[in-house]
Image (cartoon, rainbow, N blue to C red; front, side, top):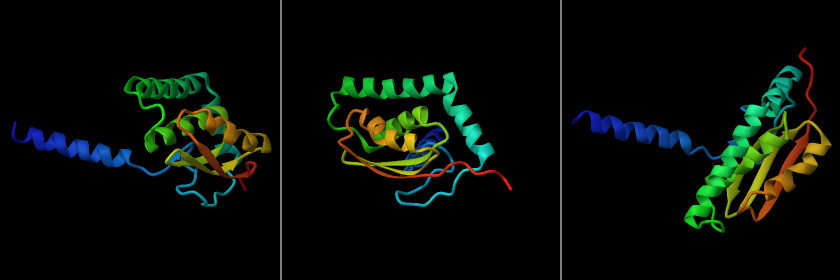
Length: 154
């Protein structure tokens, strides 16, 4: 038992450190910080990301995550005062589900959400702010997103 308790505490610390990432990202190639420049994705990678994001299973999972977080927040009475991590993750999920092949990073502070990165079309760029504002607790959205269509591998 004496060895088991330190193991549990150590495990919790490791999982906690992993969970404290600053930026929620829609893809592994998304920017780590607001304002960071991201290269255009390669066509093959963009197609793979788009196929994943548009799959029915992934879309259902993302929407389920958003609903669960909102229900948890409603149950605790925290509609107006959302944690930054919840806002980041919910906005990221919303963008990932609705903007396939995007490479976006999301940061939140005091209800202000900053979205940075790239999207493949102007239409997707126009949808970033309205989609982010659909999440409870988002008071304003700063969009630092560029349109960069996928490039071919050479």
